[in-house]
Length: 179
Image 1 (cartoon, rainbow, N blue to C red):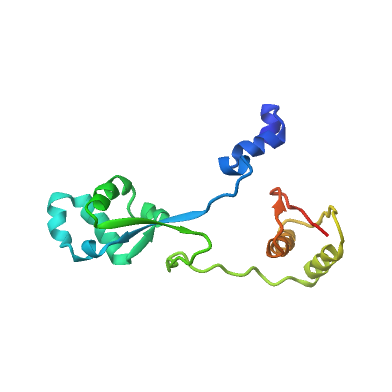
Image 2 (cartoon, rainbow, N blue to C red):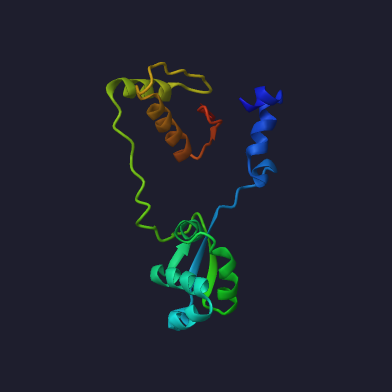
């Protein structure tokens, strides 16, 4: 562990890894930046722009083809695109928008949809039922060989807590229960 290596308290090591707003006790503002084409950008002849500014034309063409792209998608499809966006925005050919996590954003079909995990076997179901029946705070160790499905049980417990509006504390699956 990093805390052992540097002889530093684990809480301070974990806090250093958190984003600044979380360290300050503030909510983490999750926004998704997207680049969209404007009406003027749609009307522009990209070939004419390409004669003067090839990389700007490449970026404009990429966004025009998709209509709107998230910044991470642009990073994947055209590394080094960011310096060219400023001039395209100043020419009113592209616009940058921020969408909050609670708003609907068009999904990139290349990324796929989130899939449900595998069905639990009888032993996993029994372990999950036993842990769910426990009231108040408790520590539970699930013992099993690698690949036996312990993590899948933990993931179901995490899903329970999050859907109940609670939070999961620590990455090694210690749950905050408020009963």
